[in-house]
Image 1 (cartoon, helix red, strand yellow):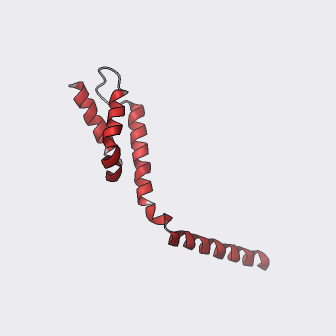
Image 2 (cartoon, one colour):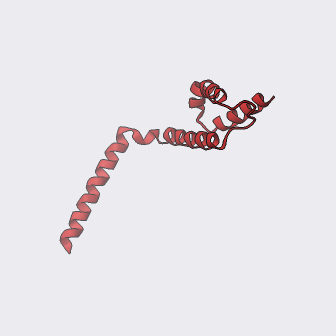
Image 3 (cartoon, rainbow, N blue to C red):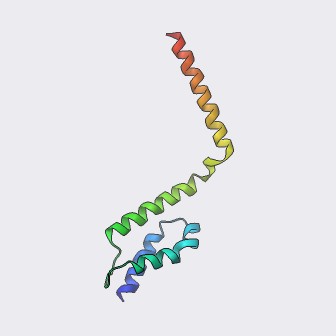
Length: 95
């Protein structure tokens, strides 16, 4: 029974990851987590909770930021950088 409880706990934590990530890696991650559990362990360790939640949130941020890696965003950043440089040079020469 404790194995089922532990597995449910890990599955709840894995829900932090984006669906696409879970679809590909959930079974493998769950197998590794369960294989590394102590005998009789009923709940995920605090370190596992911290690690899974942190990594899941970072994975969600990467998925959310995908649009910002498109070439148009890189071009916009370049133009903005050039404009800021020109404005700073103009302000520096006014003094």
